[in-house]
Length: 77
Image (cartoon, rainbow, N blue to C red; front, side):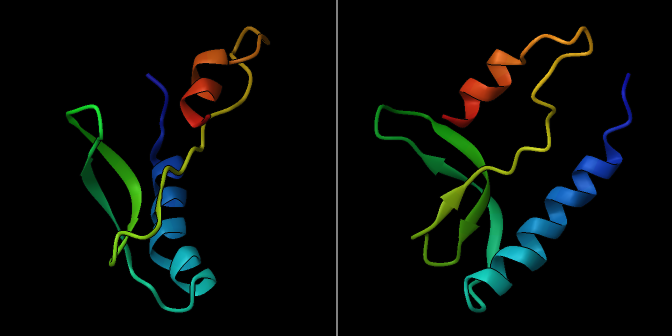
């Protein structure tokens, strides 16, 4: 199994440091948010006032076999 600890550290840094600096001190945290069509989804970055919601992806755009990682890219769109 691949070691993803560096990716997790990068994700945390983006959520805890980069986003609050970029958005003038607004805090961000991981949070499950209700979806319009039902259920909840765990987003990586939800602002304190819930006006900004996002995902942080550190996945490669290509698979180990060199093909485009279509499913990973579709998650982002």
